[in-house]
Each structure stands twice: as structure tokens, then as C-alpha cells.
Image 1 (cartoon, rainbow, N blue to C red):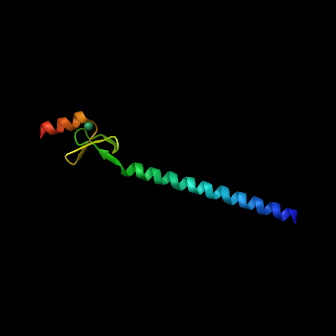
Image 2: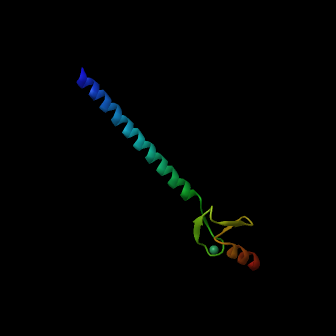
Image 3: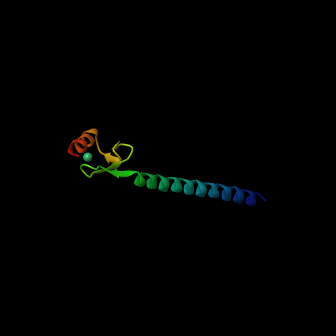
Length: 75
Ligand SMILES: [Zn+2]
């Protein structure tokens, strides 16, 4: 009887560890996809950067305010 109880507790612990690992793996892959999807290119120097660091002007993305100004003065 005691052996069955120990085996049951071990089974529950193993299942919980596997489920936690699967949850972490799913979260990691989702984060990677989000980062890739938010990469934009500077319209002036063509460098790639995350969209949360980019300067958005006139429907374009720029790596810095200086490049946004340079593109505006060129046009
Ligand atoms: Zn740039």
C-alpha cells in the first residue's frame, strides 16, 4: 500500500515538472517570434533595429532622429 502511495506521489511530481518545462519552452518560442516580427529597417542607412527603438516619421522607420531629419531634408 505504501509503495503505491510513493509511486503515485512520484508520478504527480514528474508530471508537474514536465508541464512546467513545456510551459517555459512555449513562452520562450513566443518571445522569439515577437522580437523577430518587430524588427524594422532604417529608411536612410538600411540598418535593422527593433521597432521600439526606431524613430517613426512620414510612415518610415529610422534608426535615429538625425537620420529622420537627413531623409526629410533630402526629399
Ligand atoms: Zn539610419
